[in-house]
Length: 305
Image (cartoon, rainbow, N blue to C red; front, side, top):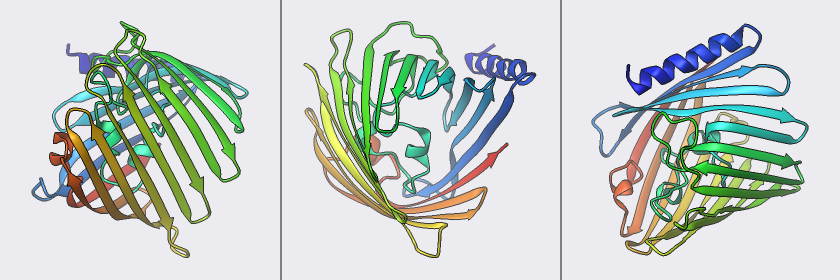
């Protein structure tokens, strides 16, 4: 039996076992995209998530991502919450900057920020899964999140085999503004990543920005991006978006990318994005081989249950 099928069976067994005394919910998504590298629409990603609320304090999450060429375990963790505190353990995306799935895929852009996809230090990037444990404490005025993780788990690994990084995030709110600092120090001498992020929200505008920098002896990178999303008055399902990005690699030079686009919620199950991007400088390979440049159109089909 392959690791993918074993992961599916163990995840479903967990959900079925928990469902006898839990509230189970889930999401199924699939993305179709047309861009300068494709011919017509192609399915680029599908995702399934199951959540089991065991009681008011305990929840489990299981999700699988199906990419063009392989399937991987996305998250498989247990969370315990009480008051403003939470602890979660297993496979997850730790809190470093805007790391939630909703921050990366529901924003109106057809690509994730290039600084989150780049190797910032020691072949470590921010768009990744981790295996470990994370603790959250505090409240809306001051929240602290700390973790220890294996930052290089295999496609279906849940428990850490080697703790490579610690992580600390300190977040505070000031009215409509949320600001945070992040640190991902290496625990085995392979370099660290530091970051700042900022979000400002109004009834029709959401603006956010992130800056990250890798520090170490080997190749490193730094970069930022800034987003502005404007929801049209009287048209709550229509949003205009713009993004500017910068990436500077110690062994590859600088690159700037600019994107404009629109997001349209067609129905409760269908969202369409259209983007146009152009860049200057030396583009990294993962940008040249992605839909970041030129026109791209994405259709997201989503079902909640």
